Length: 439
Ligand code: TYD
Ligand code: MG
Image 1: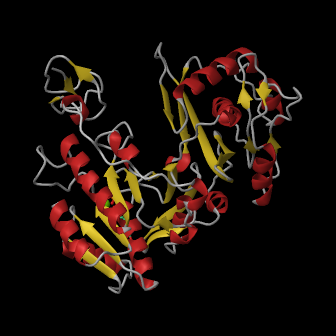
Image 2: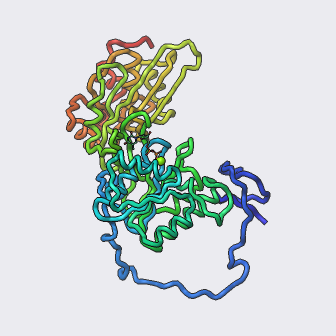
Image 3: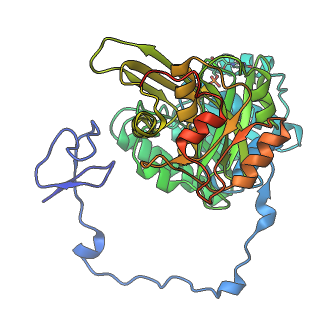
């Protein structure tokens, strides 16, 4: 006999109240042998179809009417598809989806909003504030998946929104809402309904502290599309990212701003960024990041403060901390700028996360600018900093250049790929060497 974890599938000979592999706090369950292992039975054969007889139905994709959302979805919602929308509490998931429901309603289509978290009054108040009229939008404030599906079955909508998958439950499964068993069973029922009745469905998923969608990892595999709404809840901008899409490209990003009238699309995030950028203070620089097919300017900031602490602080948000450690080492060794006696803070403004190595050079310049206490002024930079102090070319050079120039940033420091740039030279080009900090 064996016991399995319903979250990660890990098997164990012994029963335990949690999973020693993925550490989910849900008891292991006894493994049930698959029926084929118990008895062999005769089954009817599945139907084979020639590939060219299957029509891939593009017509089934319908735009929601919110440009940035449609772009991330790959053109719109596919009927019968299931989308998981993750994000931290307060980032704006419920707001975005209520606006999507309102847009569908305005086009004469029908949306069903299932609210298991907020009361009908709360949702109605929010809809009022967002100026969403009642036409086409129905509301069910219930947390029982089976009751909800019975209501939806009477009159299937074009879009069903379930807010959230962690707060709905089915009486037929054990455990409490938000637990692995309940999430999995509730999601399975919702997904089956979506496929059977051709209802596009969006499930809201809360994220855990480490940034994943809470609940079984299986959830991400069960759905067709996984979206994340990110951003700093204290700041205006929000990024909608696609991590998985069975009907389109991933790594597409949509940008919104949270305003008093809800989420507003930001068609030109780089311009929005420039409008409140203070380039005259030390430690800030523009980095044209590439997200999918789009380049977006982000601000990278660094702050350094002298410290007596033998182990100075390295506090990093938005870029990988290991990169910052490496950049500090190269700056000291090849740039002649040492932060060994400084606390260092690095931040990508607006809650963006940058994972490309192209941010090495702007991070290095921002840190050096703060150490030397000299502003960089309006400057864009990109390039990967190597351990030998060289700055390497990164992909999409022309796209980054175009984006910086488009918004009027003319000072650019970037390698041309022919070994023309070293970190020390970049510091000189940026106007930082001269006010050289003691090594
Ligand atoms: P919400 O959609 O409830 O977030 P989530 O469902 O992801 O938890 O929105 C959260 C915040 O957005 C909330 O703190 C208030 C703010 N907000 C606005 O600033 N403007 C608005 O028009 C709305 C509806 C909300
Ligand atoms: Mg919500």
